[in-house]
Image 1 (cartoon, rainbow, N blue to C red):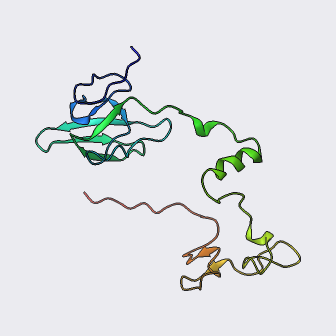
Image 2: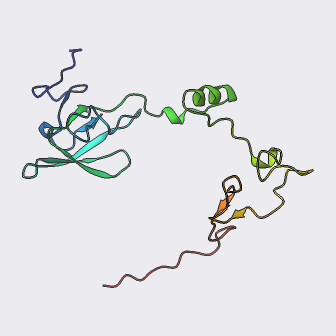
Image 3: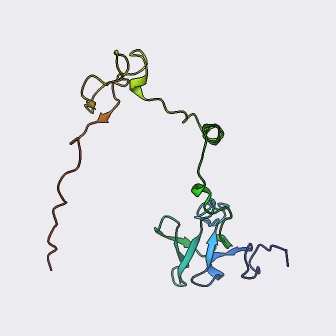
Length: 173
């Protein structure tokens, strides 16, 4: 049927919301509450889901694997929706033109377009100015630099290409 049920007696079918303690291990859930009654905080983005790993009746807690791969323990009375969030692979679609990026970031914050410092005037950015687009000085800057100067590689331990492999640490048995 096309009905969705919520509450303690809701059956295990996609779209129903119920207490996470009543769901079996391996169930795919979304919109999981961190604390009982917080109306859902985990696994809410498009295409994401969490998986119930284990139930612990002694501590009254349920272990959940999050979309990030991390594991989290939530109270058995926390609610969750069975199934995953619609809109998977949203990020796979190519943007194709600047207008699509414009509308994408207009809904979020002033993060677009990103203008390079060397393309600016010296009054606008420390990398600006000059007769060619070049920085003109080392881009490393100290941790204690004043705001406004602190652009580029802040408190860099090293710069340049990573050359050579990582040294392997012998684990002691």
